[in-house]
Structures are given as structure tokens and as C-alpha cells.
Length: 153
Image: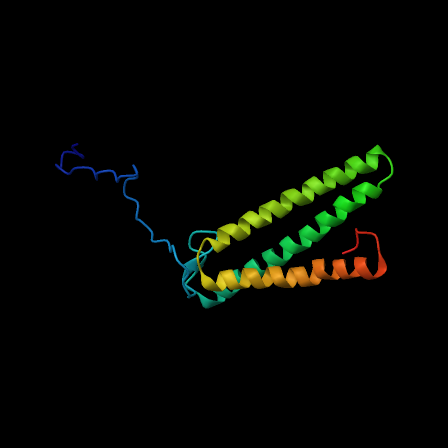
């Protein structure tokens, strides 16, 4: 193909059909280090401060996931105690909304873990543990000791 009469040929397309794109290396095993991409291209980059922010964000997402699980369990059990069809439908709609948000948070966590950064993995596990300790374990203990309504977190 002639490019403007200069006799230059257009670059040949790569095997995947993309022209002129750089291939980026993605880790397929766990690694340590702050130079990673978590959730978005170029984020957090090579900055240690941005990596710390990414770690805090993953931790918060894991705690939020456990909190939403506690809320969902409370809404599930409150549907049984609801009086009237209107309250049961409202509880079902609230359960569906909380479930949708919880699944979205779970997918974000999964994508963050697919960066294969060992620090992200450890922080996600720690966030789930802290969230479970803060929300689920306390709720279970209350229900066993005092036989409270299951909607208390």
C-alpha cells in the first residue's frame, strides 16, 4: 500500500488485528512491589503514595463487602417477620438492591486481585477478616446470647 507517494508501506496488523498498539506485560503469578496496575490502566503507577491509596481502597472494599453481607442477612430475616404484602415486597426490593451492590463490590475486588500483587491479596484477606469480625461475628454472638431479632448488625 502506497502512503502518500513516498513508497512507505503501512504497518502490518498484529495477530490480534490491532495496528500500532504496544503489548503490555501482565503478571500471571504473585509478585511483590508497588509498580502495578490495579483496576485501571496506569493506576496506581510507580508512586508509593498512590500504591498506599490503592491498598486502602482494596481494604475498604473488602470491609464494605462484609458489611453488605451483614445487611443482606438482616434484610433476609426481616422479610419473614414483615406484616403484610407491601412490607414483604419492600424488603425483597431492598434485599435485591443490597445484593446488587454487594455483587458489584465483589467483582471489583476480584478484578483488583487479578493484578496478582501479593500486597493487594493480603490486604483484601485482612479486610474480609476485619469486616467479618466487626459485623458478622458480633451479630452471631448477639443472636446466641440474647436471641435478638436477626436484623441487628
